[in-house]
Amino acid sequence: MTTPSGEPPAAGRECNRGHHAWNDEPVSAEITVFILDDNEVVRRGVADLLDAEDDIRVIGDAATQDEAVGRVHALDPDVAVLDVRLEHGSGIEACREIRSLHPRTTCLVLTSFADDEALLLAVMAGATGYVLKQIRSKDLVTAVRRVAAGDSLLDPAVTARVLERIRNGPRQDERIARLSDQERHVLELLAEGLTNQQIAERLYLAEKTIKNYVTSVLSKMGMTRRTEAAVYAARHLEARDDRPTA
Image (tube, rainbow, N blue to C red; front, side, top):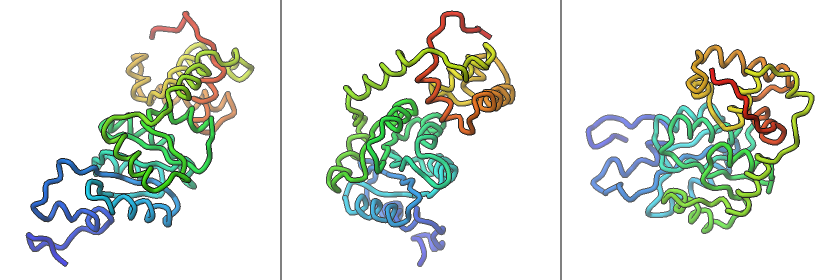
């Protein structure tokens, strides 16, 4: 098979689902979607469901966090549908990176469980919607259309409860007490969902220095992932007025 120009199509799902780019049909009203799920059956099922709609086109998918972040940046979808729990990485962390590196793409978090912690993470990571995999097919299609249009699918009452937990979480505990002032400040910024580069800009430090601080924070707190530390901080770190300014 060849394109109209006579060139063979590139390999990958993008070309299989990119037929609109090879004809004269307008694509301005079309919603482009990227899917992240480590279950191939789920990926294909969601893709087939969405592709059956005239105004939605799936342009790519991935099974891992790192692959998703890179391909979203390259493909520029309107919506990324992200599974929370992955064998390699996290859909929430992918959401955080996508929103940081590619803010035009809105993220719809898809999960199997009604998990308050996952919802908290989704809110902090910048997700526009949070739905369960048990959602009806037509409701998932509606959810994609709504987040593409800029609507939020996060229940205001639930979001308010999450933000209240962040503001009024338990006071500092032993893990946080182990940190230096600067490490604690870095942790606070992690809890705001900032990347290493954004924290470096905020503190006027080199990104490599921030990376070293994050490594030290994780080590002292006995954790392995920055997302885990961010959630912990959101719940346990008391607000301070004496934050260092540099």
